[in-house]
Structures are given as C-alpha cells and as structure tokens.
Amino acid sequence: MTADLSSPGALTTAADTAPSVVQTIDWLAVAPPTLTALAALLVLVADLFLPEHRKKLLGYGTLTALAAALALLIPLRAGDRVTFCVTTGAQACSYTADHFALVIQALVLGGAFLTALLSLDDTRKIPAGEYWFLLLASAAGAALLPASRDLATLVVALEVASLPAFALVGIKRGDRRSSEAALKFFLSSVVATAVMLLGVSFVYATTGTLHLTEIAAHLDDVPPVLDTLAATGVVLTLVGFAFKTAAAPFHFWVPDTYVGAPLPIAAYLSVVGKTVGFSGLILVTVVAFPSYADVWGPAVAVLAALTMTVGNVAALRQNTDRARSAVRLLAWSSVAQAGYLLVPIAAAAYAGDERIGSTVAYALMYAVVNLGAFAVAALVARTKPGNRIADYWGLYATRPLAALTLGFFLLCLAGLPPGIIGLFAKVTVFSAAVDAGLGWLAVVMAVNVVIALYYYLQWTAILFRSPENPEATSGTPASEPPHRFRSPAPLTTAIALTALIGILLSGAPQLVLRFAAVNLF
Image (cartoon, rainbow, N blue to C red):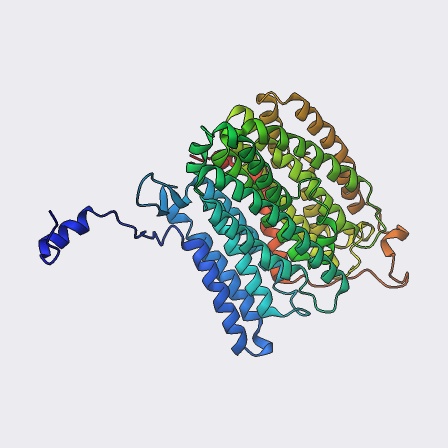
C-alpha cells in the first residue's frame, strides 16, 4: 500500500516522520570567532580605501573588534551551549562553548588584543592592512579551535590559526632574517600537519567517525586486527600537536622564528600559538583518545621531560653579548615552559582529566607574564635594536618602572616571590605529577626549575646593576648619553595591563585554579 503524496495531510505526515538533516546554528555560541573573522575581512577591504596617513585606524579597529569578541564571551559564561550537531543517530556536536572553550578563547583573544597593543606604533615598515588582517584571521582560528569537537573542524581551525602566522613572521619586507624564519616555520609546520593528517585518516579508518566523543566510544572496542592502526593514528596525531606546542624534538623552529619575526608576533606565537597547540592536544588526548591513555600518557610524559630540559639547558647557554640574545632567551624559555605545561596532560592519563585544570592555570599565568616580558623587550628595542641581554644593564637607572616590571615578570617565570602566581602555577603542576604517580617526572621538573633560576636571576640582576658597565654601551659611542624617549601610549598600556594582572593574580593565586578548574565533559 502506497501513500497518496498528492494529499496535503500525507505530505505533512511524511515531513514529520523523516529525520531532519538541517543543522540549526546557535549564532551566539559561535559569535566570538565569527566576529573576529568578519573583522579581518572588513580590515582588508578598508585598507583599500584608507589613505596612508590614516592606516592607524585599522589598528584601532582591530583592537575594537578583539575587545568586542572578548565581551561576547560574557553571555556564554554558563558554558552550556552546543551547535552544529548531528541530527540523526547519536548526539554529537562539532562546536561546544563549554567552560574549557571559553577559558581558552578568553586567553587567546586577550593575547591577540595585547599583541595588537604592542603593534599599534610598530607597523611603520610593514604593510599595515595585511598585518592587521593576518593577525585577526589567526586569532579567529585560535578562538575556533578550543570549541571544536570533531577532527575536521579541529584541523581546519589549527591551520587557520597557523597559516596567517607564517606570513606574519615574514612580513618585514627586505629582511633576510625574517624571510628565513618564515620559510623554516612554514616547511616544518607543513610536514607536521601532513603527519597529523595521516594520523587522523588512520583514526577515521578505525572508527568511522570524526566527532571526538564518538571516536572515544568506538576506540573502546576496536577489533584486534585494527588495534595497531588505531595506536599508530593516535601517535601520529599527537606529533602534529607536539610541533604546535614546541615540544622537543619538534622545537627546532622556535629560536630562529622568534628572532626573525617582529617582536609583537614573537610574543603572539609564544602565547597564543602555544595555547592553540595545547588546547588541541588536550582535546584529542583526553576527549578522543582516553582508551589509549597507555599509549599517549608515557609519550607525553617523556616529551615533557625532554622539552623542559632542552629548553632550560639552551637558555642557560645564551651569551649576553650576542645580538638578539634577549629574544633568544625568551624563545628557549618558552620551550622550557612548554615542558611544564605538558606535565598535567601526561598526569591526566594516569589520574583523570581533572588534572587538566593545572595546565590551563599554568597557561593563564604564562600568557600574562610572557606577554609582559616581550612588551618590555619591545620597549627596550626602540633604543637598542640589537636587543642583547647586555643592553638591559642598568635599565633601572634610566627606566625604573620598565626594569621593575621586567624583573617581576622574570621572577614569575622563575616561580619566586614576589611573583607568587608563578610559584603557585609551578606547585599545581608539580602536584599533578606527584598525585598521578609520576615521581620521576616531578624530580625532572624540580631539577629544571633550579636550572632555570640561574638565567632568570642573572637577567634580573643585570637590570639593577650600575650602568657604568662597558657591556651596556656595546654598539653605542661612549660619549653618547643614555637614550631617553617618551614611551608610546599603546606599548605602555600593554606593559601596565600585564603587570597589573600579574600583581592581582599574585595577591589571589587561588582564583586562577578556581577559574581554570574546568570539566571537559
């Protein structure tokens, strides 16, 4: 018996019983990355019509857009919104605005905002329109990634965040160092992405799905014949994210890239780029691959130990008289800090995903103080373009506030008072390793923290030494008086903001862990 489809009632019945394949979109949930992406397009178009002397308006527009994107996180604070969901079969969504996503989005958008502040008066020798477009485009991808809950969206978001960063590193026209840094960054990233996509294809071949929660369910009962394929897919997927986090031995691009890039972009990569990699790594390990914790847990633990050791030993060997040694030290320091950030992820394999809050807390601390350190470096580079560590000798005598804030940031990174937030973050990470039974990793971390004390304290001491030291005038005639200039207001604002947040968090460090204590499920 066939239904009479010519009857209106029959059509209504057929429509009611057929499964809907139309996905509804929660526009508020996707508003932060969407607004950032639209602002990027608007800036690119506006650049065509603005005369050269008004290009600075593009920078102010970028700041406004990033501030608005941050404000749009407030209505989402409940962390209960999902969208782009499969409407048939098992409930699986590609975008989830949960607490984890919101915290990371606040971090990356805030980092992009501070990067824009650092860049506002530093786009004289670079194409302003392209610069602001690329920065906003990368920030849009970075904001999309932590909310992604399927591997396709995750990979696309990762590349949207990364591809503009390649261009930003090499945006200084005619600068050979900048071009070489961009090429090295691009080639190594392309190889890592290819390896990651191969791993994703293996995972898809094993499970038949790309949604993270569905992958986790299917990996629980993988047929024995496919177990090796699944394990290989898990490992290869992790390799791609290990590159993005600058984990050793996938860290080799970091020092040259940071040195060759404009200083604000080096700061952006050290914070936002690293946060993107870590949030992706957390999602694939804890959400998608919990069944293979015995595979990725030991691997991440070894990566953590290797990364912090390589970063600290290399930072220890930096010569204070070498050109751009300050940026190189910050680059190697960021590698070492990546090792600490990996510890709670490794601990999650043994003691549950509640350990991830320690990584998020440490990332918040690191983002604030590292951006602050780069901001002071950008200030010093205005008069000392060589940016040697020796150029900071006696900085307190000429710029006392800059010296005090940089000293505070370095002590935070070292984990020493008055940088209580740095000490608090390191203790939480150390506790995560101990609670998970990773005593050997806790010992390695303790040794590395001691190693790092030397170069952080050495640089801090240089700030407050007598300015008569001849190293302080390397490259400057002895008869020339110390440079005094009026700091650009945006750069001063960035330094003041990071210092204020660091001081507030040091006064109430428990707020960080409470804010970052997120549940991924």
